[in-house]
Image (cartoon, rainbow, N blue to C red; front, side, top):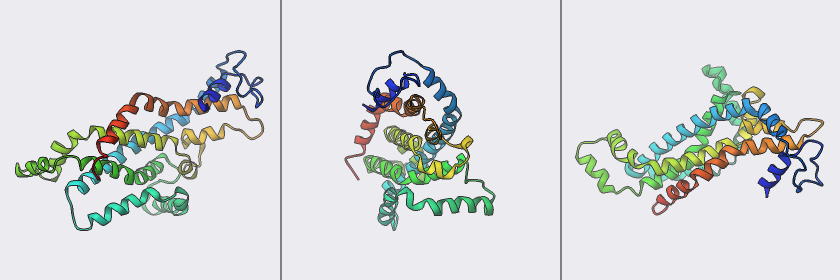
Length: 257
């Protein structure tokens, strides 16, 4: 139903769109609203791509290494560290906004690394916030790898990095697919961190720019509907074409852990 409302109102002209005709089909098809929305959102779509690609890759790599260590290299305190990492998934975004902004500003003033107000700072935030869930997914998936396989590699002389590179990593494709889809969707659709950290319109991702389409005096509902559909299109396509891999990979790590 939401998709239907977005499509039919996005295809209407500004004169035709109204609350009373919200469910009605357009009298005349018009793609002007999609063209207008695309023209205004295009720079911010590129910002979202610059944000989501490195954030997804880095969160997946860090989660993979964490999961590998926690599944096959038990150390003192591992049973305490893992629940503490998982606790990070339950911390509300709103509760960390003030210290987060202060830290990013401090990094710029003290370390000379400009993070506040930049896409790079937003990437760092999403990587850190993604570590708990990516660690959980990889740890559960790696727990399904037979311990005898890892032990045989140790007997053959492989060390920490060798076992990861030659044994664990080649078997990790399903887990990487799950994490990539999860992180891509979460980062692309996120709004609160984006509007808090990137205040300059030229550096904001598409979710913030979409909110700015509302304007201050006249709301062009047809352009807003078209913009919402364009902004949701990447995640929609990911689930349509990769959804079956997401479920398959998720179930692959669901039997242990």
